[in-house]
Amino acid sequence: MSSLFPALADHPPGQVALRFGERSLTYAELAAAAGAVGERVRGVGRVAVWATPALETAVAVVGVLLAGGAAVPLNPRSGEKELGHILGDSAPGLVLAAPGDELPPPLLGVERIDVDVRATGTAVAEGVGEGDPALIVYTSGTTGPPKGAVIPRRAIATTLDALADAWRWTGDDVLVHGLPLFHVHGLVLGILGPLRRGGSVRHLGRFAPEGVARELNAGATMFFGVPTMYHRIAQTLPDDPGLAEALGRARLLVSGSAALPVHDHERITAATGQRVIERYGMTETLMNTSVRADGEPRAGTVGVPLPGVELRLVEEDGTPIASHDGESVGEIQVRGPNLFTEYLNRPDATAAAFTADGWFRTGDMAVREPDGYVRIVGRKATDLIKSGGYKIGAGEIENALLEHPGVREAAVTGEPDADLGERIVAWVVPVDPASPPGAGELADHVARRLAPHKRPRTVRYLDALPRNDMGKIMKRALAS
Image 1: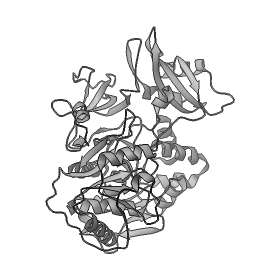
Image 2: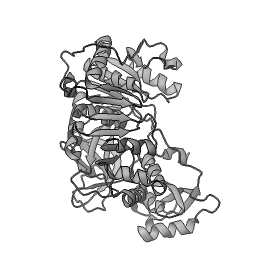
Image 3: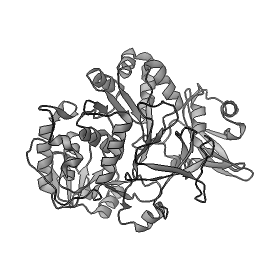
């Protein structure tokens, strides 16, 4: 079903589709190489892909999709136990990898095919529907073994087309990023997105601010990153006017996978004149909302629902919150063609994830502004703190803490408290470990910016916050 990528059949001669470092493929070369992969995997069903940040990964995934199969991207940094679980659960018939890649023991029992990016072939899928699986992406497994979210072809197409509408994304755009390719951000948005539009993508292999600047100076128009990348950019900008100039000429800067602290938003805008756009998505939903390219950029929000996406906030008992007052906190539920179809082999988890009328329970807590903008305040399981009768989102306290000049990084959690129910705990990485800001100073700082009941009651100091591969803070590790 090549309609996911019409440019593979209709492209300007010589147009580059993919570039990883010094290696590149034109659309004609990509069509031939992916076609050759497709011929090898046709009829296999589920195909594992050793998802290194390399040209072969992109060719492998496109080839599987051309053949009508479902790609299972594997994180090369996964431990053997997690990898064994994913392989046992998804039961792929083949694994695709770059020649020379050394695969770990759990994969040695799976038939391997090396991806040749200079091979030629043609793969045409027969009888593949929009509801058929395209990807099986495994969740991070924070609440148990990773679950395989089955993402249909329809979800990829509708999400990418909705983002094209929101971001004015066209075939003239050239995207630069250094995101991993085993997750929806780097793979679906960062690789399949440009290919669906007929544009180009330049992958850095490994993120570095100077690499972003180099590509933007060489004609790239968009940069996708996660907050840790933008934080490094914000730290580099004062000493690198060339980076500021390069970012200033970008058409679009997009951050996702976690909330970008307001402090970093402001530092980047002050140095470059550019506003970073945030969007909100999940493995199970792909993209739900975004600040639009033609809308008002507003630090700390993830914009409005994308075309085709229904979004509501609900109380703990499931009652919808009708008011958009910027204060009422509720769980985000979404409905639309962007959703996954099921957790593989987990009908119980699938049923628990949806309401009776088809709304997906995201577990994310948010408020909505009067104009519909969504502001996420944290995860229901780890970021919603019930203290003294108030429902408090950890995200806004974290943003307030990051505005303190003595704070480099911050995370906020709740701990049981006999009087308050839960007390607010701040985990702080100080700018100067030898002279960190005092707990009382930080509490007063937050109370002045937000409200007294949102001040941290306990402050704990760390050398660094625990983060996963996508840069998200692992709060369960803090509490353990």
